[in-house]
Amino acid sequence: MFETLTERLSGALKCITGKAKLSEDNIQESLREVRRALLEADVALPVVKDFIEQVKQRAIGQEVSASLNPGQAFLKIVQAELQALMGDSNETLNLKAVPPAVILMAGLQGAGKTTSVAKLALWLKNNQKKSIMVVSADVYRPAAIKQLETLAGEVGVEFFPSDAEQKPEDIVKNALAAAKKKFIDVLFVDTAGRLAIDEEMMSEIKSLHTAINPTETLFVVDAMTGQDAANTAKVFNETLPLTGVILTKADGDARGGAALSVRHITGKPIKFLGIGEKIDALEAFHPDRVASRILGMGDVLSLIEDVEKNVDKQKAQRLAQKIKRGKRFDLEDFKEQLQQMQNMGGIANMLDKMPGMGGMAQAAAGKVDDKMFARMEAIINSMTMKERRNPDLLNGSRKRRITQGSGTNIQDLNRLIKQHKQMQRVMKKMKGGKMANMMRGLGGMNPPGGMPPPGGGFPGR
Image (cartoon, rainbow, N blue to C red):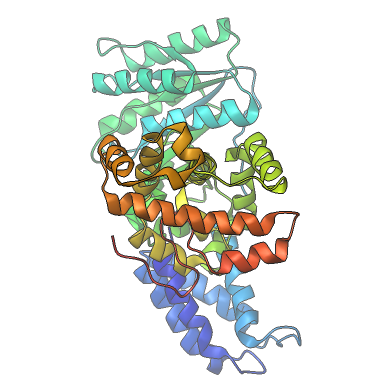
């Protein structure tokens, strides 16, 4: 997300290097570039106008500190205003209610409401240890009810059955009564969506809201619709007392217009971002971190949280001890490293959160197919444990058997072996905790998937 905006804003900040003081004259070109960047990112025009005016007011006449150059001073102002535009901090869900706290999900058809119910249910279950029940009031699409039942089973939360013959109001009232009896902490209500806003839809969801008086009313919207997302949220907000927004498909949106427009247009905070198809691909929305990411400054806090949540600490500790004792880094270890990287969302996701690596994240997204992790894992799974422990055993006939078993070719297998050897060399330098040697080794190797060091090119397949 925000790749296009990041690229354009980087260019805008170069316009004022070498100036001793920020003035109306020397920031004009930068402001024009920022305006153009925001419009290209599909940010709503009123939002762009207000944003540019705020940056201009703060920048004009500001003395440049001795510790900063003018570009950095301007960058600080743009970052602060981006953060203010999206909200000063993450706004958490309000679950302060006599259980169950009810969360009503609203939005157009195809925005990802049902999937978002399951993702958010899993997030609350894992992060806040809440007991969850979900119910679908979408009587127009029986498939939506079945989908929610399937997803509820997948994430391990309670599903309250409903069918197309029932009235939506009766469904939610019955679900609320059942949740109270079972001492459920949070009840999610998935509502019907339409392809466009209509009076019947608004009337129905309004009566549902009145019937259950939810603690949270979340609007689910597709980030890829840009400023239309903010305008649709505005219409819903005029009908319902929305408490927040979930932006879905954020990983597929290179512009970021929705994220920058929603709060300004609706006055409601973005609370979560849907960042992929996996059921755990949901992130709390932190405006300060997102502002840093937009400006190519990375998002180290989110990266640390990803590591804390997704990396198997016992396996990592075992590998560290093994290397310390001077044992070989084998293909079984390599497979575990691939799995850890997949758990963290792949190379592009990781690089996107590293300071100064935004451009490389874009390149990775375009050139590195994260499915290659699955191919590499399939190759290793087709080997015997003896072959994984000692790759030197891999002769021609063994290689043929492995590639046939994994549905790959000899080139894929040879590339895997080469990458494993590169990683093995790095691990040798780690023996005895020689961190400086390890970092030198990392500078000369390509990580799994053929990722080059900064400035390098991608190998062709």
